[in-house]
Image (cartoon, rainbow, N blue to C red; front, side, top):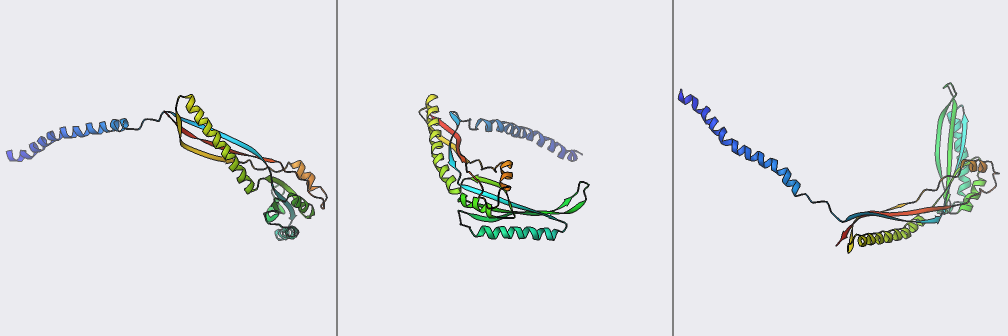
Length: 251
């Protein structure tokens, strides 16, 4: 009888011995988060976020001209063939004056879709084809626009050539960085610091794209005589470079 009760007493004794050990584990686990928090790096002091920018206006030297034609009919194949014929004729005319880098030509959008009446009944097909002429020789592009028959001017855009934009960005970046460094040195002096160290910095360039000419002007050009040169006048693009980041002011 006594022998049968011994294991239960042994388990009871062992459980009592385990309690202090378990308690110590719980205390240690509760203490760890506080210890980790106390070892975290405090936020840096004397850090200032700054930004500066510089802008220059550059004459636009790249012109993009988009010509378009539309055909309608009851048969999709016939409409597509008419579009192809008009586009081929325009391409042949444009390729005669192609000058790589100065006047380049390529096809644009070519679409064909069903046409519906006000009651939602299909009444035929309508298609559109585009020819894009672009380059730096603006007078030649303007002359070509007047010679291409069967297509009308849809839009004209002026922008900067890649080489022109990159050169302008390089010049403006130098001014923006110089302004950033001068501002950092001035702020450090005003706050009573001896100097500064750049922590992180970003340099960003932005050139607003040249927009298409207004719809009213497009209508005038479309109604002009076919052999007349397209009247165009390029404007200027603003190239802006912004420098922003943080500096650590030093004692």
